[in-house]
Length: 467
Image (cartoon, rainbow, N blue to C red):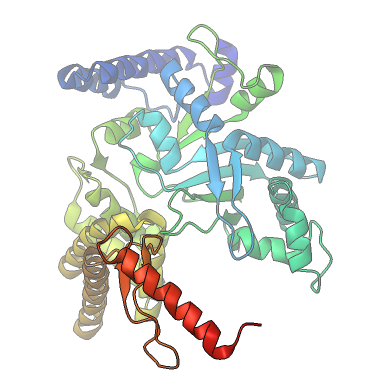
């Protein structure tokens, strides 16, 4: 309702939100026609709105894309003997929330965050995402809440195991601890990373899945349980959060499987830009522009993300002081990762997460070349030797990838040998040359070779005696 929308914003902005929804729907219509002039006009119409509201109502096209996104099957790769979990985002959200609340942890809301939210907001198939970032608003003041949440998530993962795999895992771990929701083996099989922050911020992260080059369809799913967080974004283009509560309520009410939505019947879904003005962030996303503020507040300075945006064709927005922006990003990166070992680990982790496939090797090289250029031109906080060592490190990583590319391009594919059309030509007993020749079936010598082989067998039987 209009009153409900006003409550979301804290004052009466429902009309503004509806105008934004209509404007974004016009952008979607222009995108379908593939008319670049019309698309630019539609985007400019959104940017021309004077609203500074953080919130916006998703138009039907965005809700429809979100609905399809929630129904799409995703894969969470296990490690070792653990099988791949195949599930939908809708099922994951509903089960995790239900399990957590059953364990006595109240959930304020559930949000889709980061690049996947930008994918929905932008309605652009070219917009890529490499992980699924879900935010659960919870109260973490009680000391045992994080442990209860972790056990609840493990319990949910257990429920997604394929049929029959549980018995196999029980047999493989029969000498270990008892199988159950607290089983540490289950955590080791699917939980890639556990993080707990408790200072001025208060949140916990459970990262699921082991995406790799041999199984590029796997995604990293990050479940973040947030009580307080000061810095919620790196750049405006990834500052969007889509509140999923109304869509989850719609799923629980509708009896169809999957529930049907239409242009005249779909839930009202609210999105927020945590960087500030939703209209401004939306304009940056649609025009592929880079903008942020206070990069020194971001862990790692946002340097690696900045270079990834440059690889994807984004450019600094008008009015952005690129020189100072890059200097602050480099300074914070080297504060958080002061030695070469930590720098290499961070860069390799980022490459594995955002360029997981063997088909992305050229993209990795392009990314590292841009990173090398930014570090070379904008690093002012290091001594010359330290700066040179980091540049050598990046160059070495580029060289290693070039070796992999060269090896991949010179792979010789061997066809399996098929011996069904071959018969023995000559048989020698008692020598190291048995058999010494092969003759194809159907050749002029095939019949003679077969007769010779039969004669040899008869001779051998006469020599050794017939049993």
